[in-house]
Amino acid sequence: MYNLKKLFASAVLLAASTSVFAIPALQVDIDGGTYVGGAEESVMTSADSFTTYVYGDTTSSKISGADTYYLAVAIVSADGSSIAEGSLSTIGDFTIDGTTYSLAGMTYGTPPVDSEFKDLASHDIYDTYFIEIAFNFDTSTQYATQNVQDNPGGPTAGTGMYAQAFDISRIGLADGYELHFDAYGLTDLCAAGAGPSCKEKVDVFAPFSHDGGTYTVPESTSLLLLMLGLFGLVAVKRKA
Image (cartoon, rainbow, N blue to C red; front, side):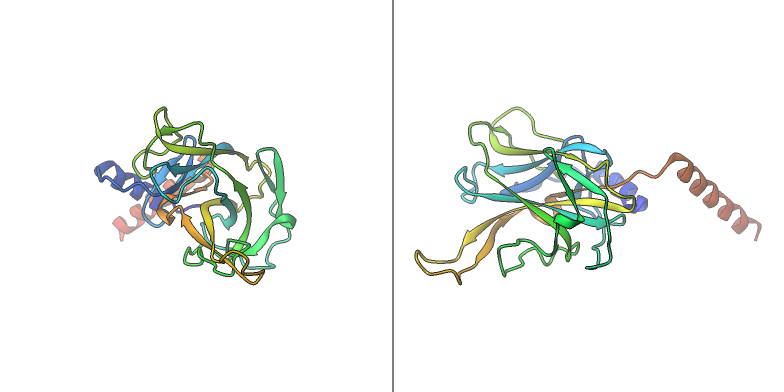
């Protein structure tokens, strides 16, 4: 379970803030999601079925309809931390655009898969289990430019931004595990005809404050017990 104190504190900070942020070349958003600051700095959802979007800024030289980009979907523990290799026998499963994924089909480590330069290694959710989904932006359709830190929750009508949608269900995911989303594109470091030893490197990625994830809302009874426990501690302290 993501830290509720972090969620509530972040909501208060966001309500009091009217900061304007720069627009990254790539961003991750979630339909109906909420931007959570603090230690998370991600667009988050507690829904079991939802749409995740990757946004591409049409004014960026790093965004093109001809280039291939990737959505990485990683498994993290309920508190958002990484998972040790070999520590899992199953995670249940989740689906993306109708395809079902389970632990058996995931890679362990840090994306991207096809690069020795593990450019997302500084993101502290890795190493963990993940999959990569390759896609190209449909440049025939644009949406209004937005920044997920200011305006999360899905694209709106307008121009200036591409949006690639992924329909996701985590209904089959085992308790205690959540999904995390990153987006990036790769560049070829090889000159023409340089041979198979050449490598690719991340050329553009959604900053870690512009990625996404899921969290589970605790049952109402659990919240009630937590509140009663806190009131009890306060009462004991006063008597003392």
